[in-house]
Image (cartoon, one colour):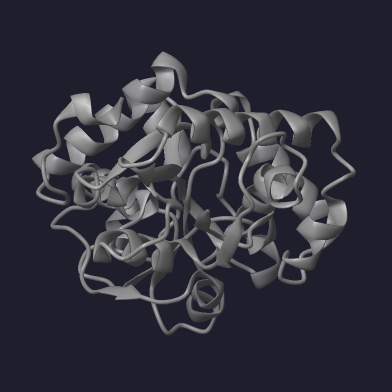
Length: 287
């Protein structure tokens, strides 16, 4: 079975057991490791593999061909993207805004984002519609690992960051303007839908969900079994950052979306559709 997911620690942790033949009856995996922006494109092309990890933001373009698998993905609380600037952080976290942390400073400015088909981007646009007078200026798409250096070096005015950047941005001397996960949770009371596992509708979807769920459960039951595999793909992350990444993004929603999870996905995509950011979807196609 052909599958594509990112080399990020949460994905390799989740799929280690299946990838290494630890799930009875599960087919052998032919794995492509790719950034989620690449897997989004593979799914939309119609020529993607059997199973993929994509952004929830990309779902509206692929639901005719692919079904959402209700486990294995990344959805949770306290794990959202961050808006960062290079300004003075003396008031960051103090409950007041400096010029560097006031959303109004983004009016007409350049903001770097990792993709325009990502949950991070949807959350940013939904937040900016409320918080940035007149809207932001130019959106600059760049690989996520280049965003923090670009903000630090003044190439852009702010950056939208994801993944392990939550833990490493202080090393770049950057300032947190807004945690968009916290904003989303405060605004909706729902968890944040980040990455989804999808499979071709022509396949045995119940079996794929079962094998994926067993792989998640195996990972939790044998956390050291995947260590070498995870670290070999961890892009020079420290073991401490790798563990923090897994602990944040692999949670009860990874084992089962549940009603909260489905509600979060529906809320995100329906709000984004109203803003003209994604096509409208038929919510029945999510289940």
